[in-house]
Amino acid sequence: MKVQEELLLQPPRGMRDILPTEQIYWQQARRVSEKAAQDFGYRRIDIPLLEFNNLFERSIGEGTDIIDKEMFSFSTKGGERVALRPEFTAGIARAYIQHGLQVAPKPVKLYYTGPCYRYDRPQEGRFREFFQFGCEAFGESDPILDAQMIQMGWRIIYQLGLRNVRVRINSIGCPACRKSYRNLLVSYFESKKQKLCIDCKRRLETNPLRILDCKEDKCVQVKMNAPQSIDHLCEDCRIHFKELLEYLEELEIPFEIDAALVRGLDYYTKTVFEFFAGETGEDVKKSALGGGGRYDGLVKMLGGENTPAVGFSLGLDRLVALMKKTGAKVYKEPKAKVFLAQLGTFAKRKSLRMFESLERAGIMVSESFGRGSLKSQLKVADRLGVEITLILGQKEALDGTVILKDMSSGNQEIIDSAKLVDEVKKRLKK
Ligand code: HAM
Image (cartoon, rainbow, N blue to C red):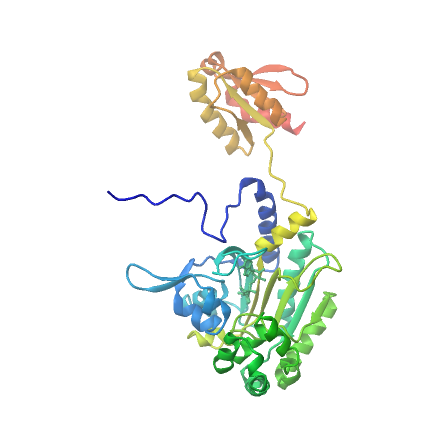
């Protein structure tokens, strides 16, 4: 006989349910961010949760923590190597090429929201299933678009009621200036090789820039004196960065240049940035609320035309956690002003249709159809604090009428059910 495995009544580690009571924060975060994206002319795109593994390997880059350690990869029954998306940008660039979106007027502005998966060590603000909102713009190389991305992210965080939003920004150059910078880095880290962690010793051969992203204490020490990309930019990258900073000054967005900021994904060129928020004096080194940058080489690298692009993503889990902590404004759930009570088998049957005609007319109605006694239904109506209770008894159901009770005065009147919608609307207006 097959022994049944124990059923664990919990999701896998690092994943969790978001219960209805918490949705007021999530709804607020989603509404504010989607509204901002739409206001800035972005259109929604949805992409699959699964992509071929090599899409992420090529774009995020081997040697990054995401690819080397954090991918939820597996083979399908058909033998295809796939992975749960650790982020959206790679999949969106894939969709942009696949659907020939480059023929649309530039820039092509897209936004998205949904879950991502990274097999990271769960801790505060770090989950294996987490949610992102983000924007990507394809086909524009002007730094004004980098500024607009930062403006949007900044505005969303601010509009969620989170204060002291800070932007950390850096330029990691383009392939042209990165080549000589990479050589400088390699010779610097070669001279300190003994002090690096095992992973970074390997990275020195495969992807030396990634050493700058290592969180190991000893590597953090070594990289403090490493050459900085910002000092080795080519003329084009230097002007791009300078103009971006001027735009941010114009927008009065507070930013800090962080020459150590390299971000954990390989596709970036030129601009990289991250968002932080918190009360003054709080540790600014804590996890970012979001991040992004320019990735002018990604579309071409994946097989598309040469297409400059820039984008950012916000971590909704972290935004929500901070909203809760700071008592930020939440989404106000709509409340019904009308309650529909029924009594008797025939009336109960009719009540479903009556509910639907009110709802179709845009009137939100509460009910407690499962309860038999009128008294207990009226108790619910009282508790909900509705303005009107409609009572459909056996007699009314047969007559084609309904009793309308004004909850503040207690007055009751009999209404022709054919005129019910108009009568309810009239009273609610009052
Ligand atoms: P990222 O910095 O890897 O960038 O992720 C963006 C944000 O997602 C982070 O700042 C953080 O708030 C949230 N996040 C990341 N990992 C976790 C986790 N394990 N648990 C909770 N939240 C997390 C990207 O994903 C890029 N695709 C951003 C981008 C868009 N660049 C250009 N366009």
